[in-house]
Length: 265
Image (cartoon, rainbow, N blue to C red; front, side, top):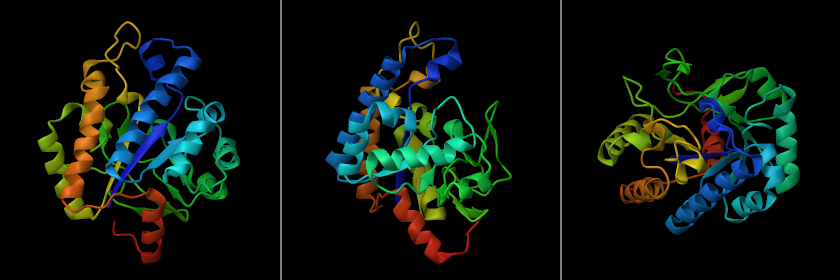
C-alpha cells in the first residue's frame, strides 16, 4: 500500500526565510494547493490522508468538508503550525471533529518535530506519523529510530519512508529534486522491503514557489513547484497503479497493522 499524506497548514514557511506574508494569503495559498491535490486524487481514483491544523480548519471549513465528502481521511497537524502547547493535542482533535463530524485518530507534529508520546496517547490518538527516520543537517538526526512502524506508549508510530540501508528520505524535497525515474526506483525497492510507503507533502508545493522577493526560498525548495509538481504527483500515482500498488488512507493501514500486533522493526 502507498500512503499519500498532505499537511494542510497556514502557509508560514516564508517566516523561516525572513519574509512575512499576510494570514489571508497563507490560507489562500494552502487552499489553492489543496484543491489541486484533490483534483489529482479524484482523477486517479485514490484516497489519501490530510493532516490539518485546527487553525486552518476553522478558517476554511468548506475545504475540510470537501476532503471528507470525497472520501479522504482527516488527521490532526496540531492547532497552529508555528505554536505548540501539549494541550493543543487534544484541543486540535476536538476542533477538527467538531468541524468535520468524523473521528480523528491520527496526528503529525508540525515540521516533524519531537512530541511526547504519553501526551499523544492521553489525547486519544491511535497513531502518530511525526518521525523522519533519517539525518538532515539542522533538522533531524533519527538514525536510532526504526525505519518502519512500531509501538511507543501504546501509540502506533508510522515514520516517513526512507530507503533501506542508507535511509535516503522519500519525502517532499526528494520529489522536487530527484529525477522521477530515480524516485520510482527508490520507491519500488523500499516498497519491496517494507510492504508499504508513507509519503508526505504540503499543499503549497503545488503552487508557484519561485518568487524570491515574496518567499525567499532556495532553489531546492522551489524546483518543480506549482504545475510541474502537480504533474509529478499525477505521474507517480499512475506509475504506482500500473505497478499494482494500492493507495489508501493512513487510518485504514493502521487498523490493518494493529491487528498484526507485533512491530516488524
